[in-house]
Amino acid sequence: MKIIEKKTWPDSFNKILSSQKTFDARLDDFKIKNGDILVLREYDPTKKEYTGRIIEKKVSFILKTKDQKYWTTKEIQKYGLQIIGFK
Image (cartoon, rainbow, N blue to C red):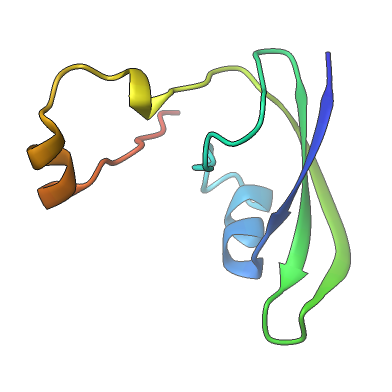
């Protein structure tokens, strides 16, 4: 189990805190796996500083969009991808 810290803007932070948002979309530029702890540190982009608020979430599912073989590159460039959370 690893602990991974990431910056999160206030709107996303508040939705995660209230359980309205039950997922997070990130660039796949770091290693993470089920069971790891994702530490989300609220960051104010206007002030360019951390607020001090922190949320810790245990990772239970990872969707790697690069591994998806259902669509062509042209379709993905035209429409983009959605990551859909469930409750």
